[in-house]
Length: 247
Ligand code: ADP
Ligand code: MG
Image (cartoon, rainbow, N blue to C red; front, side, top):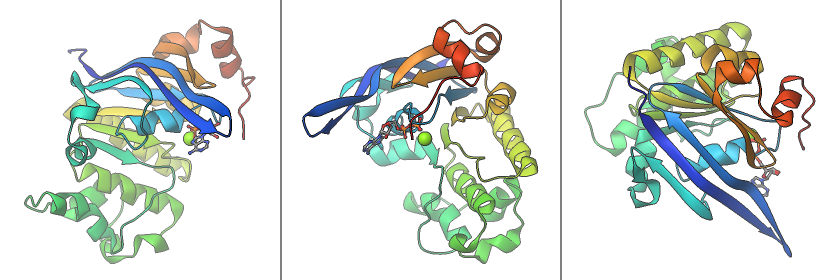
């Protein structure tokens, strides 16, 4: 199987100006994300995981460095086209007005392609077609998260960005989602960047991991290597639950 680099993040920094202070939310971050694999972003709370994830579809702007998708610098891509190719599932879903089906069909309608059957995507995430006509805001957290994933998949993304997507799911739903996503990687070469604070989940789903701490990359590499032999004191501390986050 090829080991093609799908996303290359090269020396990016993201600065936040506050009063006289400049805070580096991301500090000279570099990593490579391979096609058809799950890449987990790890790190304690406040380490910059979500910010890094959101730079990948340009929801957050970087101040330094470059991000390439298929070797093309992302600032040169049409933003709508890029957001279709790079789907995002946020920690807490925000829905467009309308039903679950409207939300799933939102992307396909934008590009006026022949509309897919939304039930296909509902079924994919383990929801029955009865949910199609519901207002998504009336669903449970776990159900909302599944709709959010179905909506992202209906755009046929090449890359899926997941920000702690299972934090509102029970164990069974979590296992189902992990299976759905890892199958998409294997069968359709979907590339996934998965923010999680659950080390067991990262071990189950990820081929590669990046550990962030205070906006810097501490470890980058194969998941199996990281979990067995972390290379840095921060890596060891994180695996032992001793690397504190900020709230
Ligand atoms: P994580 O997802 O790892 O918990 P985040 O990427 O959400 O971390 O945040 C990283 C750091 O950046 C935190 O210290 C957070 O407070 C800060 N931060 C992120 N976005 C903003 C913002 N828009 N305004 C102020 N601070 C921010
Ligand atoms: Mg976060």
